[in-house]
Image (cartoon, rainbow, N blue to C red; front, side):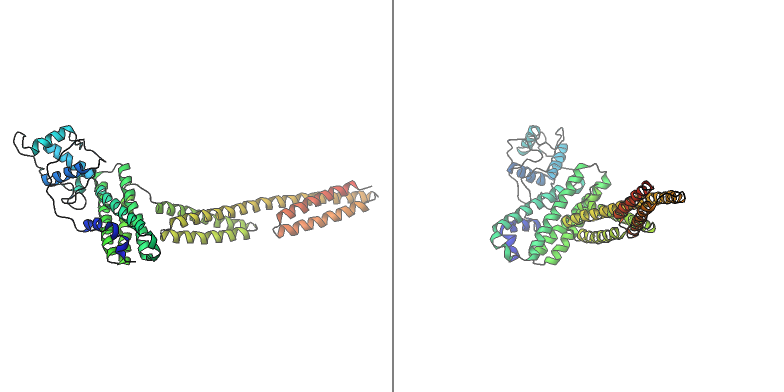
Length: 415
């Protein structure tokens, strides 16, 4: 399917306006019937933005909010421009709230009824990066573009099977990058940053924005590979901004968990070597170790490929394998110790029975049946030792206990 069928159908005009700003339009006198403040939407907001831009209190120098690209949304850049206008025109408090006092001042200026018939101008040019979070400007553009993409996708759902993999990949990556930029803004709002830190974050945000919209241009031209590369650049800058603002990305969390499990695996390897040195059967633990190592390698690849759901599943699997291997070592060690102790008890009991039978024989007692039980005890002890050597500790314990019981019974059958 032609690329413009997917995006241009609903959003070409909006995206084109992002790439090529429209000429400045003159603002008529505005009529305000309500206070204007953060998150308010309406044509009165757009009229206010046009007025501020023409009066020298620029909303933005480029992009959304700039002259000719005013919006109906009252956001941080609009608030910052209102504050400058209020300060310049002695409106107190200069809070960015465009209420009755500010509107009365506006009407006075618009109707040329203020005392000197002159509106105060800002003494220095304004720049959004210096005066308000430029991220709001970016997010307005992103939200509009995302809405256009969603609408176009819905309109063309019947023919989605003909869309190329490149186009689908682009849409998925675009959503991911725009979400990352939103996350960066949220993180920046949640923490206190000094001037230098905030400037660094905003620089990364602006770099992400530039790459994002260069990517859109490439996408329109059908240059999918270059468009994806630019999205990757935007994603990297957005993640840097997020981290610099103190946030931790999903990738960071998964990488931290991967590192922890790799440490656990290293410790498991040492434990297996120690157990092997102590003649413990470690074959099952070694198999589980090898499997866990392979799964962690796959998880690392999934993180590199940004397949985070798959990476999380693999990390869960590796953690389970490491736990199983450790349980195997613990169980084998406990069973081995118990088997060894049972064999030693049986040996002591057999030695004692043998001495008792020999003394009875010297005294002329009938020890035939006792010797038969003693022989059975010795046979069971030999079975226990064989099972112990084979690592069959449960069988070794059972045989050793039988040997001990037979040795005790042998003493009872001395006549």
